[in-house]
Image 1: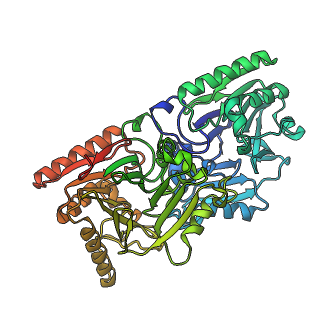
Image 2: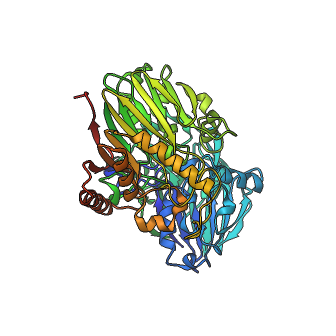
Image 3: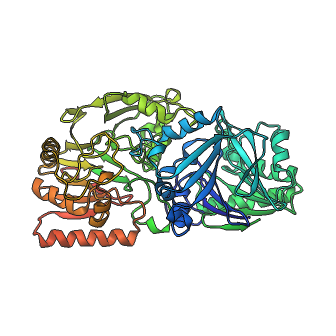
Length: 283
Length: 311
């Protein structure tokens, strides 16, 4: 499978020359299966640019199908939906899976974004594409785009966010953004989800000094990410969801410090990559 | 007074190299009367950096007061509010003004922006004191030494233009609006452009004419007219039902109202810096050909203008 990063920033888009290299768009990652099927993970502002790139494919003709996995409904993970060009083309179809007590409640959350006070779109039903919105049951695998997907719930401040594991032909990719673990670290179920992942994309919103003063926000520093990668025996760790105030130089430093931390804690063999907009990764 | 632009983009923030010069943050303008508290128009993502700069002064000690005039509550005009640092400091005061449809209170609209599951910090948990003030079009009120007037614009749901008079000068903020020719947007959802050449009902034409007259009156003789010019003429023809204008529309209003300068604003998200340069040059050329006496500029992040006797 092939991964591409369209938005790697947390909380709010951060435009400006100081974020040009890593990018200022909020969370969005695409995964293409070997057969070419598309899974999109999270719908931050990066989704607009993914959508524009899809217009030259079957999505431009209204024959596109994709699965969207939604970690949670905080703004920085859904704010790109109304600007995702393929949703305005009748015939395209999206299966959206995320957390919710029921599928109708999840759909209601997406509808809330398009409330007429906030958006001229009014409702999902005004988009040309069709949507099949389904709540995910954590721990129960399902098939999407020819890939086997399993979700588990992580604590995220006063709320929760889903982590996803995607598997195809014995290769595995885990997406774990917005994870705020207790001092004891990830739960056994979550660690099992991460176990042996070829690529573990993990929330590294903060450096430890910033995380220490903002524990209640429910994000990881690179230390929790590195600890999780080491405990799970991941092959490669990808840093992701950088704080909106971090410049490219700050993210360089975060990556270097994460590398040093891995080396000092038994993770010398783990490859480390700092996610940047536009970057592609073969799993 | 000083006018400073913190976000000039429409629809959605657009980080990246192609927007470095004009900036990728959504709508936010700070008006600073001489010796007074800031009056902020719109709370797009640009308000995040404004908030940081305010925290270096009285707002950092919890002694600040700000007035925020919201043109309308579409995301690109309010999405920065939860990231406005002064809200998280006890003692600061914020007054939020907007026109609201009759069926929902303004406070409820802002409360739902940060409710679970959309944002982790609800409105009631903010440290600052926030008061909401609902406006009707045509109302006039005073903020310290500044007189604020407003009128309704042609945009889906509702949007207001504001005029601020103080320090012997004035500025008008007119975003977002469609021209007052092809379609009346009001509050219904419109999925398609109107049929070309279709006759407009008289009642609609009358409402549009009244709306336009209200805007021209608001802009009369203003020192600076900030205007939604998101579309090119071709883009407008494709999407007249989206509620945005072209530089040509802005020139006509500025000319008729005798504005002393025109500022292009609310740039389209996919407009590169080079494309925006070209639009500015073309608009200046059109104004020159027409013999317009006013200056035309294009807003960019960080642009600061001084108006009136605040020298």
